[in-house]
Length: 342
Length: 287
Image (tube, rainbow over the protein chains, first blue to last red):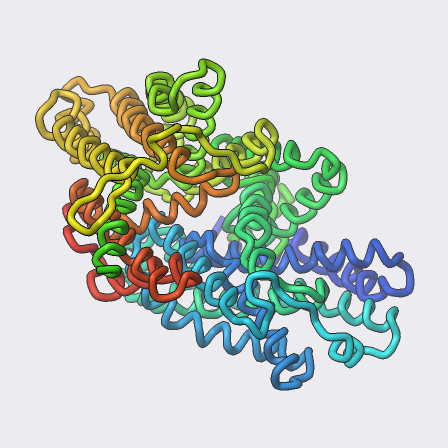
C-alpha cells in the first residue's frame, strides 16, 4: 500500500445517512402543527428548548472546559428582558427575543472578566453566585412584580398571532428553530478556525497554548456567545410560559441541573450527546414524572453512575464500539485496507 | 451605635459562615476537591441533629455527640466509596458527581422530611443575651463564634502539629512521594473528608438552632461558605474565618441600609474583593 492509496476524508457514510435522516425528521417536525396534537406540540417545544440549552452548555463545558452551574443567570436574564422590553418599551416580542440575546452578550462581558479569575471548580461556584446576584437584582424591580413576578399582558400575547392555534404554531416553530439553529451554530462554530482552536484546547490545553492559541480569548468568546444564545433561549422559554418570577427564572434545578444531567448522560464533549441525552431525559420524565422526587433521586444516581463508569456517556459508548460520528467534525484516513473492511 | 451594633452582629454571624466554610477549605487544601454538595451536607447534619434531639429528647447541642461521628463516618464512606474515583487532572468528574450527590441529598431529605421548614428547639439558649456596655449580645451568636474559633484553631493544630496533619500536607504537596513514604492516599483523603464533615455537623447544628431550615437551602449555604473561602484566600483557615466575618458584616450592614439588600450586599462585597484581589485577602495556595 503506497501513500497515494490513502485518502483523508471528513465525511463518512454514517454522517451522510445521518444528514439525510436529519433533513427528513426536520421537515416532519416543521409540519407538526398539521399532524400533532396540542399537548404533543407543547412537549416537543419544551424538548427543543432543553436541547438548545444542553447544546450550549455542552459547548462550554465539553469543549471549552468552562463548567458553569450558573447558566440560569442568562435564562432568567433573557426571560426578564423579554418582559421588560415588551411591557415598558412596546417592543415586538420577536424583536425582544433577539435584543435579549444582544444584551445578554453585553452583560456577560464584565461577568466573564470577573469570573475568569476563578479556576476550575471555583469558577463553577462563582457562576452560581453570579446567578444569585441576577436573581436578587431582578427581585428588587417592583415594576416587574418584585419577588412574586408578573404575567405577560394579553395585548402583547395577542400581537404574536391573532388566533390561539396560530400562536401555538408560532411558539412551536420558534422552539424548533432555536434547537435546530443552536445545534447548527455549534456545529459550524466547531468546524471554523476558532472551533479547531477550541477542540485543541479541549484535548490538551498546554499543547494548544504552545501552538500559539490564545486560550483565554477563545474561552472568553465561547462564554459570551453561549451567554447570548442562552439569553435568547431563555426569552423563548418565558414567551411560552407567559409568566415569570425570580425563583422560576433563575432556578438552578430547572435550567442547570437538568441540563447537566442531559449532557452527562448523553455524552459530554460530543455534538450527538446532548441530542441523545435530551431524548432520554424526556423519555424518563414522561414515564416517571408521577414519582415526583424519586424521579430526581434516580436521575442524580444515573448521572453519578454514568460519570464514574462511562464518563463519555451513551454516545461515547456507542462511538467507541462502532466508530460512528454523525456530525462530520473529525478527519479520518481511508486506505485500501480500511476500504475493504467497509 | 446602631452601625456598631450591625458590625458586631455581622461579625458574630461570620462565625457561622466560617463554620460553613472550614470544611470546604480543608478538603480543597488537602485534595483540591470542590464539593458542590457541601451545603446539602450541612442541611443533612441539621436534620440529623433534629432527629437525634427529638428521638432522644436531648438538647440540640448534645445531639452533636451523635451527629459529629455520624457525619464523619458518612464522609469517610463517601470519599472512599465514590469521590476517590473522581480525583484526577480532569475537574469535570468531581464537580458533576458532587452535583449529583447534591440533588440526591436534596430530594432524599424532601422525601423523608417534606418541604416544611423545621427548627431545633434549644430552649433558653435561643433568646438569652448579655449586655456589654450599651450593646446587647446574644449568647447563641457569641457561642457560635467561639465554637468557630475553636474549630478553626483545632483544625490548624491538627494540620501543623499532628501526624495526621503531616499526612494531609504531604499528600497535598505530592501524592506520589507521599505514597512512596507509606501513606495510603485513599485512606488519607477519606480521613480528610471525615474531618471536614465532622466540622459540617457542627455547622449544621448551629444553623438549625439559629434559623429554620428546609431541604432546599443547601445551595445558599454552599455559596456563603464558598465566598468566605475565596475572600479569605484559598487554603488559609484563619483567612476563612476573616472571610466569614467580612461576609457577615457586609450582610448585616447591607440589611441596615435596606432589608432587601442583605444577601445582595454580601455577594457584591465578594465580587468587589474578587475584582481587586483575585486570590483573596490572605492567600496561601494557588488554585
